[in-house]
Image (cartoon, rainbow, N blue to C red; front, top):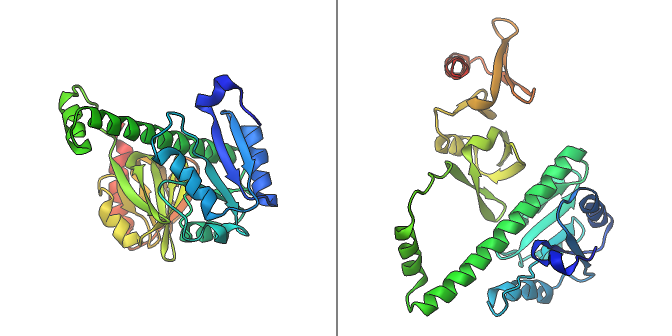
Length: 286
């Protein structure tokens, strides 16, 4: 899938270990990607290759960034051991929750679920490309900033401070929360989180864009989430009240909360009084 010269600025590059799952991922890219992609098969994902990917944009010697997304499956995951870095975007292809946990335990950035439906696959690909675009823009900005700082004979921190002082009319940022996903931290918009569910030593954070596996306990996470936006409905689940469609009371003992996507979550009897009060208040607001 070679790109035309005019498409180079939009090209998304992938470096993959050959395998059935990585090939299935490539077929998904062909079917669902809205961006031109370049697919490079590498039988040996050695440290030299990955270090080369880093050096291509860390050196700052070229204005053309040629970073690539490293694609592996469960069989080739061990080849990335000790080589995961914030400077590398990595994705693992798999089919089960066990595969996903294995990926995030190894520090892989993203997990692509091959057994997901078409809509979910499209969303995952779009999110991966969005992450790639964000990283390349960040690196371009950093290289340009370092060059400008050298020209002005000041430190990068001093330059950033000057630029902030010159800004005006800045729109307040959307409230976010930093979540530890694998070996990295990811900023997630609070308004995009639909609900959070405990999964052993991990949390499954369900957002409008993707599902994240987070290293945290439900108690720790609940203390960091704003109480006016999130409420705990049982021992395992916290919901965002903005995504609550209605309360369903089957009888005096059993009640459910229905989310806007149709999901139904049981409310524990112990939490029902406080939960009902907060959800009633949220539902009464326009």
